Length: 106
Length: 116
Image (cartoon, one colour):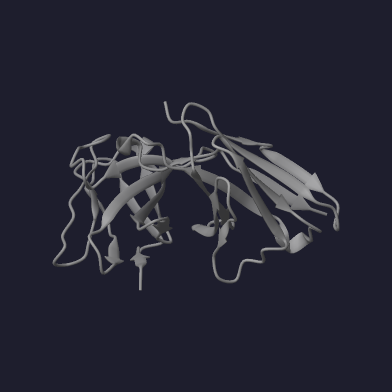
């Protein structure tokens, strides 16, 4: 079955602390994975694609096929990072995880 | 680039009436668009895949007759909630995938439907 799991509903950290938002997937094919972010009252925005292997806003995510994971990391969280983060798996459609709310306190 | 425009952003309707939501790709052609529903503080649930020139593909448990989808052109898909009831109140979001791969999927700003 195709599935995306984000085990944490809420992650709270202080500014400057490292952040890791977990994502695991289940897919028999070669996965195409994304991280999307939804800031308060804004539309969903693409944050990262696993194919591009880039760093956006200090965030990185590495695909680990052995662990079927695509965790999102940032070494030093900022208050403006507070948002909902969704991990998504592309098959012929986009399947979302349940999302993790990141709260960064000053 | 790769913008999806969704209209209206908010709509309030009476129980039993129908509401149409439009989703337009502004600077690219989209043979396929997607419609999602998002409940408060929850994730996006895919409702259906809208295919230009053919019937939409609905996810399991989504009523085809209640949520009518039309994709008559390469830049427009519409979702009509027919005979709306209060339980249909939700946030509806459309999405499309531009041909340039780097954009991933792009999303509309959503429509908040309230049925009273």
